[in-house]
Length: 30
Image 1 (cartoon, one colour):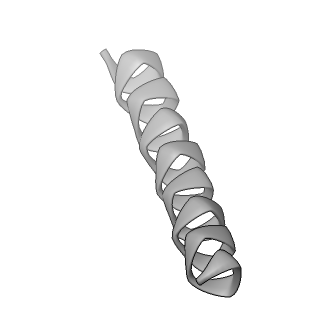
Image 2 (cartoon, rainbow, N blue to C red; image 1 turned 180 degrees about the horizontal axis):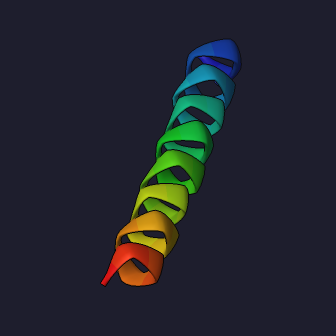
């Protein structure tokens, strides 16, 4: 159970980083 929570947490962290990078890139382009 704890392993599953840790996995979901790490995946969401990766997604947040990817989204923030995408937003930074789009703002730089604009």
